[in-house]
Image (cartoon, rainbow, N blue to C red; front, side):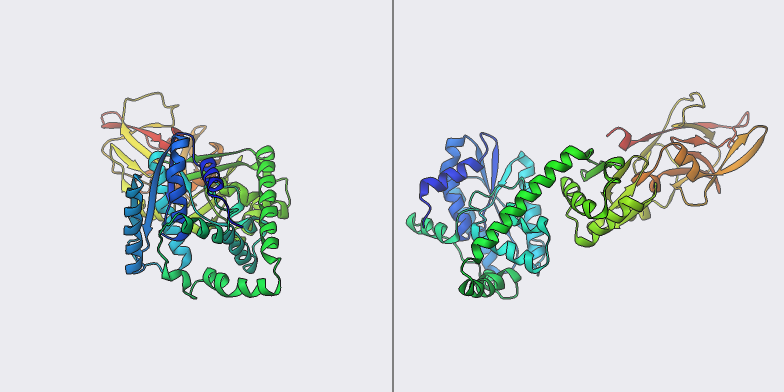
Length: 443
């Protein structure tokens, strides 16, 4: 059966935004060239701007030719085109895919555009089979049907139907030789395994599609349940990286099997994909993790437990190593804290400290065993810094990085928390009032 051209136009038109902008992912192959041809006409009806994006994987002369071919064709349709090229030759499908998607999202981000791809029904069948072979759960088996901001107007159209359309419209395209290479799993499934399975079980394609549809429905139901039952907030840190805060009381009530369903959905809201090991670790940590503790996850992420929240952040370990110990100067930025000089204020303000100006002051992250001297009655006593941080409600991802200011080997100030009572300013000595501002507090 061939999908009539008007029906393809309707599919693409519904995927294009009204007004606004759309980025077409075009590789030069059959499917994406059909998308380009249909979208070039449908855009007028929707009144939107269409941008063509093509990515050269630097996998050989053929990839450069394909990118140049897409540029010529896009300009022929009167559409702007953006090209990207890999800085190095990637060897795996996953690396190619990650580089391509980073490029597409960057292009879309400049105009807040939606992304359209030319994935077909055949791609969905192959994806579901490939994930089943890898032991994926229901979440992964949704494949291209999974809820997504990516729009795929051809996901119910077969590759043969697009070929018939392209030939009827005299479209030209480029065959990528890497699509025949048996080195890649998808190619082995597409050209060898799936055809063999279909010969012995012709209904398998429909069964795989049904599995994908049911898994996608399940994901939508999980998403709705999470929205209704769990309070969470997605934000961005100062670098623009996604952050996720989840109310602890809303998730600690669940069992590990339920948490293994909830957490991948929550993490996905921040653009984080959890593998099976990460999901298992988070589920266990939700039940047994203590306030102030954290676990490392793949991809450079970490989950920490504060008093009221579970906080998912990009791990700061590498940055902490770069922030060892530095002289305290003004103005200066240390991690997420900015220090400046200011006027003396009442000693009750923990974000200001008047310290001797003739002492050499240093700043570093607090460490286990650190102590601060305070006055207790008529005598001076020391107390561990970790207790001051706990009293101030500082926990979660920020606790490990919280700074302390030292004079020699003695801690004289925990910015935002407490000044040492031993750091007295004697008459006649120079005094500097330091002001600290925690940037995340303002974000």
